[in-house]
Length: 419
Ligand code: LLP
Image (tube, rainbow, N blue to C red):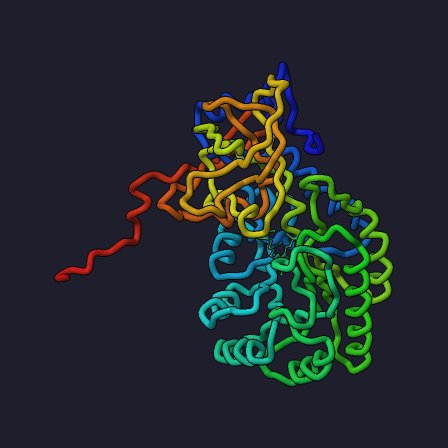
């Protein structure tokens, strides 16, 4: 298996050195399990590939905002790419220095901007002229200067799923590269603004280098023009990281990306910022789930499991493929089945028409590559309880988030007194 931490011993799945059964017996299912060794391996891969230039890696915490994972990622030297006041709060609590936090997103609210300014974050990645003016207004009211970059939309096709492609001209993201110079000049004149950077993020699950390089070249051209006009750019932020292998995607090595980008960074004399999310945590986590029932209708098999679209929405939302393997691998008989959850929606599936070894009810399955955009996109739909999360390190395991319990469902609910 691509993930070294997953292995079968006597046909039983181990996560690092822990038998899956220990985990499901102790914590129940559905259960997210993360590997410490894979996480640190992924972090180091970025640090090593770009070791020859000045860098700041800002982990995109939307990919997985588990508090303990954030603490580990922060301790390794990473900063955070945040998109909300909530992510700012949790990142700061996790010990990430505000000097390593960049703030992305098209719709930052005034109270969130105020919070970020008061926290003295490194940089706002500004996505529109109106947002720029709002940040300026709030910064002046605090007698501060907001450090900003513009998120440039380079109009490059990232060749990924259309829901997660962001770098084309007509997407809601960023400012048109054609408008950029004018806006930078305007920003440079504002009292509450200090221009420091230039940013892009063309999309997620990128498995080709060429769109990233093409877009980066466009940004470099812009930075050179700005520098000539006296607007000094010291931070070049190229957005999210590379994609990961879910099925058989060939993802270029980080060293290849570095080889193409480093000369650009050296030429400009800037600090490189990257905001990887998926490639840090995606293949670090799996979702363990129990088979509840088998059902056959007109020769179609359904494997009904206890994890649903509320736990892992990627297959329902993007038709995403996640490899699903049995936790005890002793059947030679193969079947083809839809692997479906308990949620009352036809779109509630984790796999369709999937060839898999025959499994019985009460057996367990492991959904791979579920560490990114898994738990962080989970919901309580159908009033299902969000799963627990466990971190495995060697032969040790740690509960890093409790499974929700029934009374959690009533938190924040209020009675309309008198109705
Ligand atoms: N920076 C910005 C501004 C972003 O919007 C994102 C992801 C990233 C960085 C991290 O990109 P990554 O390294 O993970 O490719 N829920 C979808 C993915 C949405 C990505 C949103 N933005 C999925 O499950 O595939």
